[in-house]
Each structure stands twice: as C-alpha cells, then as structure tokens.
Image (cartoon, rainbow, N blue to C red; front, side):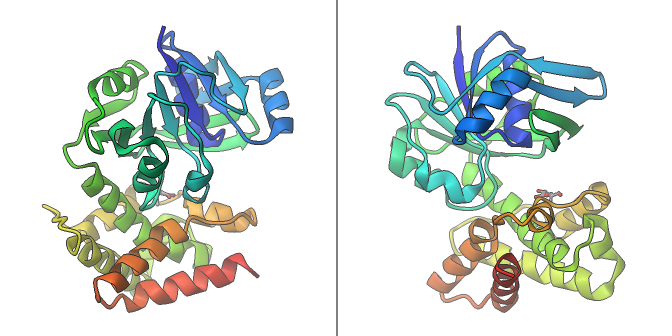
Amino acid sequence: MVKVAVIGPGAMGCLFAARIAQTGARVYLIDYRPERIRRLNLSGITVETDAGEIRGNMQVCAQAPIGIDLVIVLTKAFTTPTLRFSPSTAVLTLQNGLGNAEALAGRAGSNRILAGTTTEAATMISEGRVRHTASGTTLVGTWTTCPVEPTVELLNAAGFNTQVTESPGQAIWEKVAINAGINPITALLNLPNGRILDLIETRQLMRDLVVEAAKTASTEGYRFDHSLVEEAEEVCRTTADNISSMLQDIRAGRKTEIEAISGEILRRATQAALPAPRTRTIYQLIRGLEQR
Ligand code: PAF
C-alpha cells in the first residue's frame, strides 16, 4: 500500500489528503500543533464538493512515520526551512512562492525533490472542514532526478488533473508572477480579485507588477510563450469573487506569503541589477500592513 504524508492541515492540505486517501493509499496529515492534532483525529477531515462530501480516512500526527513513499508539502512558504524528512522519501512541493524547492533540496537532497503548482482551489469552512471551490490543473516535474511518474499517477487517481512539466521552475515562476500582481493589491485595498480590473490605476499597477516579475524570471533564463499580463487579467476574471490568500491572511491577522512572492522577486531582481520599483514599494507596504 502506498504511504503518503501531507504536511499542512490548511484547506489545500486537507483537500489533497482526503482525495488521496480515497485511492486506498495510507495517508498521514502532518500538523505541528498538538491540540489541533487531537481535535482533528476526533472530528476527522471532511471535504465538501458539488458531488457530495468526502470523509478522508487518515491519521493526523506531528511527524510522518518511517517508510513513507511520498511527502506532499502544502504549508505556507515561510515554514519550509523548519521541515524535516526521513531518508529516501520523495518530497513534492506545491506551495506558493519562490525558493521552496531549493530550501527542500537543501534539507532532503535535490534528487528527492519534485516541484510544481496547482490551481485547485479550496477554502476552510471550519477546522477539519473544507470546501473544494474549483477544480484546476496540477503540474509536477522533477527538480533534478527524482522519478515523477508514480506521483503523477497517484494524483490523477485521486481525481486531480495532473500533468508532467519538464520545467517546474518555469511553472512556479508563472504562478508567482500572477500572485505578485494580484495578491498584494487585493490585500492592500481589501478587494476581491475581479475588482482590480475595474479601476484603470489598479489594473495598470497589476500589469506593472507582473512585468517586473516576468523580467526577473528572464534573468534566470525563463521565457514565457504567452503574455503573463493577459493571464493575470484572465485569472482576475475567472476568480472575480475570490478573496485572495493574502487578503485572507491579512483579515485573519496572520503572516502573509509576501516574502516568498514579492520579497523573493525583489531579492532576485536586485541580485541581477534589475530595477523593480513597484515590487519594492508593494513589498514594503504589505510588510507594514502585516505589522500594524
Ligand atoms: O493566492 C491566491 O489567492 C490565488 O493563487 C489566486 C490565483 C490569486 C486566486 O485567488
């Protein structure tokens, strides 16, 4: 039987854990808070979907047991450097932001890392209860040499539309550029995603942020075969009523992922001597907002 650990009991972690458990895999959901572990083991994990409820058969625990085949990391980016892994397990990151795969490679060895992105959407209704709000596409690729096929097969069997990407770094940059354009503006102005397009100034700011991100990506050798600005505008339209993850964090008084998104773009742009003035300002404003 395949054994899978999912790190992070947030909305996405619960969604992936519950759907993978349905394939017959043995699933462990990893949390760092002992009290919540106890409560989640009592309540169980439930995912609401349009087709009904999924009750995930899994164990919630603080550490994955020995002999796990795959670890899926779905925590916030700022926790990545604190994670520990037992030897020889494949580790897949589907987290937001830049630098996660590199940080995990430093801890587990680059030959064990798979990396990618997902546009699945889920929101937490209450502890242990999640709503799967939209199906998306999951892209997974090998960071260096870790075999990708078993993981892609598992995710497809779990009902996630999963494809192999030859360049996980490119897929991650593409998502980061979109997040860098949308998330900070929604968080600063307290707006759902679609409203960014309503005002000429916010729309232009989003475009400029995405362009700065794409230019920074190009200093690392990534080229995009379509306009990321148009893609960001399309995401605003298709997720018009969504409250972005960064705005959700600000509303809940939580730390945001700004460091792994705009902060990391800014650091990489600075290293490449590329000016990124709007990214800098927006980064400073979100850091200020977090500390109010
Ligand atoms: O971070 C988010 O909220 C999402 O990635 C996105 C695409 C901005 C939609 O809300």
